[in-house]
Image (cartoon, rainbow, N blue to C red; front, side, top):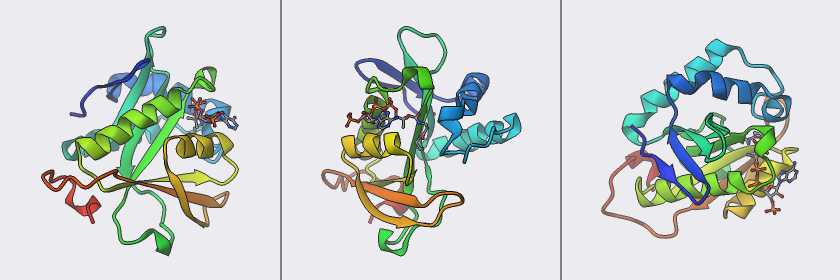
Length: 189
Ligand SMILES: CC(C)(COP(=O)(O)OP(=O)(O)OC[C@H]1O[C@@H](n2cnc3c(N)ncnc32)[C@H](O)[C@@H]1OP(=O)(O)O)[C@@H](O)C(=O)NCCC(=O)NCCS
C-alpha cells in the first residue's frame, strides 16, 4: 500500500476502486484530457484498468495517489509514479525508468497545487524509494505541464515522436545517492 503523503494544503492517498468515478470525471474534462489522452473521452473500463494497474504496482512502492484539498471531500486530481509508457529517446540512457504523471481538475488549476503534489511525490521517490532519477513526458504544446516540471526542478533532456504531438522528455536526478536503500533496483544506476 502506498503511504499517505501530506503537504501544506494537500493530502495524497493511494488511489483505490472507491476513487474511480471521481477521478474518471476529472480525466474526462476537456482541458484535462487534451494532452494525456490526446483529447479522447476515455471509457470507464480503460480507467478501471489504469487504477488496477496502479494497485498492482503498490508492492514495489509506486502507483497512483489521489490529491485532496481540505475544502473538497472528493479527490481534485491524481499524481502517479509508473513505469515509462512511451519509447524513450536514446539519449535518456538505459532503463527501465520511473515516470511521474499528474492531473488536476480544471477548477483547481493555477494555485500551485500541482507543484505541491509533484514535490511531495518527488521527495517520496528519492527519500523513501531511493530512486536515482525520475522522468516525465510532456506533449510539446502542453505549456502548463512544462512549467510544472521546470518549477519542481526537472530539466528537459530530449524530444521524441508521440502519437499526436512531439513529446518532450524531462528528468530529475536525486540530490544524493542513498546506497542503503534497495528498491527498485532497476531504477538505480
Ligand atoms: C499540468 C497541471 C497539473 C498543472 O496544474 P496547476 O496546479 O495549475 O499548476 P501550478 O499552479 O502548480 O502551476 C505550475 C506552473 O504552470 C503554470 N501554468 C499553469 N497553468 C498554465 C497554463 N494554462 N498555461 C501556461 N502555464 C500554466 C503556472 O503559472 C506555474 O508556473 P509559474 O510558477 O512559473 O508561474 C494542470 O494544468 C493539468 O491538470 N493539466 C491536465 C493534465 C496534464 O496535462 N497533465 C500533464 C501530463 S501527465
